Length: 102
Image (cartoon, rainbow, N blue to C red; front, side, top):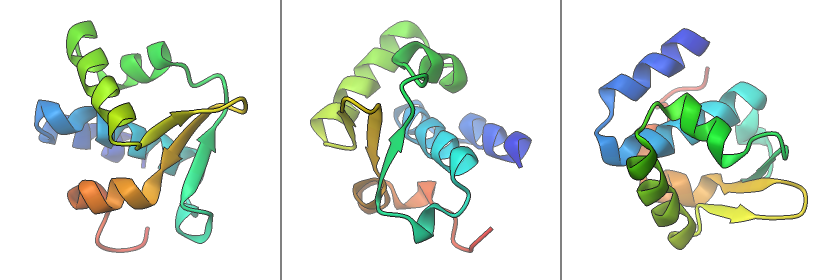
């Protein structure tokens, strides 16, 4: 499953790579996320540098898209870790979500 999700990054436009990377990380951590609250909190270990490594974006591109994700309220920093608003992500980037349940 991980290789499939990672391959999706190469199929996205640069503007959508970070969003796909964050979705992949959420899915790998919680494959049943559709049954969870639509706000998923990633552990503190998932720092910006870790997400950048996974996304394979350049540093400038990564931080540009990260800032946009914060501005869109897709990501929110909390004391527990990075919160991902999956509902908003699905609304703004519907192609990121699979059409069928895995």
